[in-house]
Amino acid sequence: MLERVRSQDWPAGALYVVATPIGNLGDLGLRAWQALSQADVVAAEDTRATRVLFDAWGLTTPLMAAHRHNEAGAAQNIVARLREGARVALVSDAGAPAVSDPGARIVREVRAAGLRVIPVPGASAVISALMASGATSDENPAFLFAGFAPSKATARQNWLRQWGSLPVPVVLFESPHRLAAMLDDMLALFGAARLVTVARELTKRYEQVETLALEDAAAWLAQDAHRLQGEFVLVLHEAQADAADQGGQALEQADELLSALLRGVSVRDAARLAAQALGLPRDVLYARALALKQAD
Image (cartoon, rainbow, N blue to C red; front, side, top):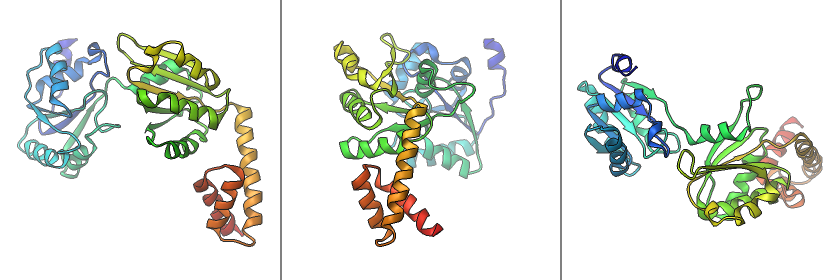
């Protein structure tokens, strides 16, 4: 198998975007290993973190820094190398570059220069959490990846209202020191019965994946101090049918109120007043008020 992978086509003058392990170093694929081995240089988000992976896998390819603070210059350097026929691999500290990690600018610059970009897939915290959560299925595989929530409470709550109202599971990242606050906000916004999967330290020694109702989340965290340590992926499961019906009824009620308000005030004021009365996001109500106004 190793010889078969090595003998595959490895075009020169191409950028190889390589997913690396999110924790367990054994999750580096053979094709990713070969891509990193055959590259003339590897552009890394943090060369020290990548060196740990290289030492584990016996890789000696030269490294260059390519992080969010030097990405513009790194992109120009990489394009110049590719035009000379070099193979360049791009990696982040863990997981897939350019997906909630630096690298997208480099990919865009390479593609804009008319050069080839080759993805080499691998470990993903998002997909790993979904695999262990049961939140999706072959009948309904849809989900939404929302990344990190805002750090401030009000902004985070508005962000949760926006994403959590959609009829799909929502995958998000959270830091240990904000995890409890995030779960409290979810409980307040989405109710006691809504399910959430807490995935901690995925692929690592102390991996833990727990699916529970939001009303039980705080007690579960309090049972063990270690549950507030590590890296977290949360899956907010899709609301059950009865909750979705309640959401639909709330929007119907909002439309009735907005229609009445629009007879005497502007779209902006109607959205503001309805948000105060119903506790729904103002941006959602503004969009509905605007649609009602245009239809009228």
